[in-house]
Each structure stands twice: as C-alpha cells, then as structure tokens.
Image (tube, rainbow, N blue to C red):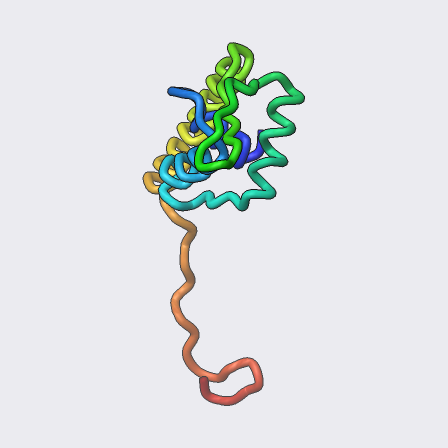
Length: 123
C-alpha cells in the first residue's frame, strides 16, 4: 500500500470526507509530511474505489459546486488495520535493532596515523 493510500484510508477512518477535507486531514495526520496534489488524490481515490476499500457516500452541492464524500468500507477498514499493524511491527523491529546496536561494542578504531602520508610526505 502506498503512503498516500494509507493516509487517505486513515483520513476516512472516522467519518466520510470530500476531496478537500481528505487533503487537509492527510496533511494533518502526517504532520505535513504528505501533501497530496489534487490530481494525485483523485487517482488514489479511483484506485481505492476500484479495490472496494472506499465508496462514494453522498454528493452535495455547495456554492454551486458538487462535493463527493467518500467513506471507508469494511474491507477498507480491514486493509487499513492490517497495514497499520504491519508498519508498527516494522517500526518495532527497527527500534529493537537500533537498541541492540547501541548496546553492542563498536568496531575497534585504529589510532590516527602519524608520520609520512601516502605519498611519503608529512600529513
């Protein structure tokens, strides 16, 4: 699952949202790390709809413009949950490895060279 798809599903986890609302929610959920462009968002929405992870919830006219609201399906919730668990497991494994690396003795570092350098000169 792409990062964009993950955050779009996460944005729809609590309530249906329209395109602009999804863009804002994705940016907020990712602390600004993911800023989707409109074209990218609608490509992701099309793929998630085709995969039956989201569905069109309703359409409303606001100030003469049509707003489409999308919502997560049960399958979308399962996919989001599975991906969140996969990511958490990966983060946990990485944190464990980092902690192990900090406890392990580092490689022996040779003392700095003194005397002539590679070309026979003084370094």
